[in-house]
Length: 112
Length: 110
Image 1 (cartoon, each protein chain N blue to C red):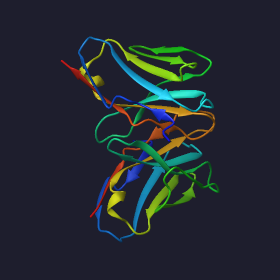
Image 2 (image 1 turned 30 degrees about the vertical axis):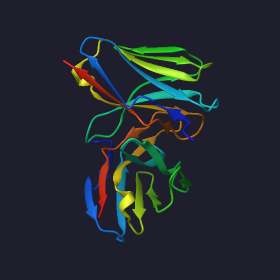
Image 3 (image 1 turned 120 degrees about the vertical axis):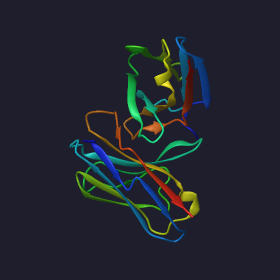
C-alpha cells in the first residue's frame, strides 16, 4: 500500500468551479506539503503544515487554500479555478528529524 | 529570484557512460542538498543527499559532489543505464522547506 495517497489522480473542471484535492498518509509524519509542477518550472511550494494547528504559505499560495483535518490528512482547495492552475499537484510528507520529503503520486488537474 | 538552478533542461548519454547533472544555488544558508528522480505519472522519489559538512556522498552508481565555495553540486551516475532515464530535481534546505530546481531530463540511450 502506498504511504502517501492523493485523490483524485486526474480531474478536469471548468473555470470558476471549486475543487478540492486530498492527500492522506500512513507514514506518521507531522509535516505535510503541497506543490505544483509546471513544465519547465520545476516544483513550487503552495502551502505547508508542520502539525495539525500549523498552516504556512509557500511561494505561490494565491488562489489556493488548505485544511489540515488530522495528522494524516491535508487537503488543497481551489476556490474558483482558473486555466492557469492547470498543472500537476503533489502532496509530500516529512518527519521533523529528517530533511527528506516523501511524495504522493500526483493529481493532474486541467481547468478548461 | 531562483535560489536553486539547474541550467541544463535536458541531457542525453549513451548507456554505460557517465551522466553528470549539475546544480547551482545562491543562498549561503542552505546546508543540506538532495537529488530526486521523477518518472512520468509518478511522484518524485528521493535518490541521494549530502550535508554541507561533506564534499562527497556515494551510494552505488550514484555520487553527489558539493563545492561550497562555488555553491555548486553535481550528481554523477556511472555507469548510466536506460532505467535511469527520468527527470532529476536538485533540492536544497536551510531549516526551511525544500527549494527545488526546475529539473533536468536525462535520456540514456541504449
